[in-house]
Length: 310
Length: 154
View 1 (cartoon, rainbow over the protein chains, first blue to last red):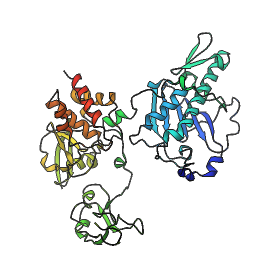
View 2 (view 1 turned 30 degrees about the vertical axis):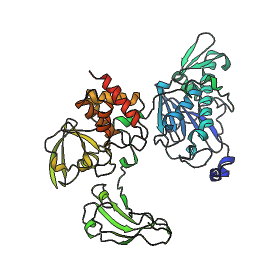
View 3 (view 1 turned 135 degrees about the horizontal axis):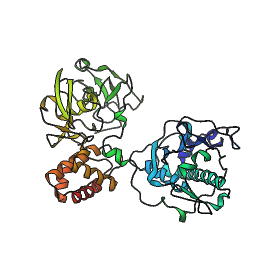
């Protein structure tokens, strides 16, 4: 077992997780993951409570046919914004052209199933969530097929699904979006058959990245683009070499700059501090230049430990 | 503080800022146009590239006081331009992006290159795009996409 698995919270793993379907307040079908007790009364055909979307859904099949899939990892170039929806959409037999990816918010259900924390790293996205997203897709598909079978008075195994359409034995067909409301009233199957890899339509195939358009027209929001009411921004003045510490600072000029609220020394790590000075400001300009400019009149002590000789 | 009239993506804007404020921060903090990215602040990485009077320009080092009446085009407006649109389409078709942070600058530089040199050679591309850094190292796909966009232009 890899050392990283020590991060797993045992309580998290022993808790059962449940998938549950519900009707979306805005219409359509939501498939959500619950980590604790299943809702009593979810069994049977009574209408499930309406939910506000997300906060814990993985799939939202909208009335317009769009399939919104929550990505429980941060996209930073590795491609999970596309690959995790591909996995789910493949098992769901969804029309890929209708798939919309969304970055999931912070919530327990979006934690890495193995690490037990909501994180990305260690090349774990596909390794840890492959089964999770496959099951989500397969169960969503099973509910849509069950809804169609009920409608046509046939058995689910007489029906087939492809490209967001369920076909029945008598040439019936229904689009997923048409079945969503009925499917939301079905109980979630406990076990479903996952595809044999030879049946994969999307996994292993090349599709275009879903995050490209927003990254090509400037609309993609990055951390730097976040703006919250009253938000302050801190920048750090790094010493020129690893292990350096502040010897002296004269911040009187820096404090005259509009928007600069404070300049202070802060050791992040008691013994190996390399990030000694912070500037807190209300706007990124011009304070963002302070750490690299001369306005702080900083000098550094870089020989404070004996381990390094440069 | 001083008041400046500028033209951004064909729209007239008025901003009241310190004359030394770089164009980048006027776009990002005054006009809330965050598509143009801050990378290094010293004109070394190209993430902040915009078109100023039609020329690819590092907006992090151009103070607002030097803009004058030259029109500014940013990543938010480049799709209105036929060359810009072709480059964006080629970028999407070739899956150029990874993390995407440098892409606004890459695309603005690529459009400027194709406007000046519609059929660029590898050398043209390397010389024109060399100042736009990408930590995901997608340079090969950038070169392919520029050639693809070039092929789409009449």
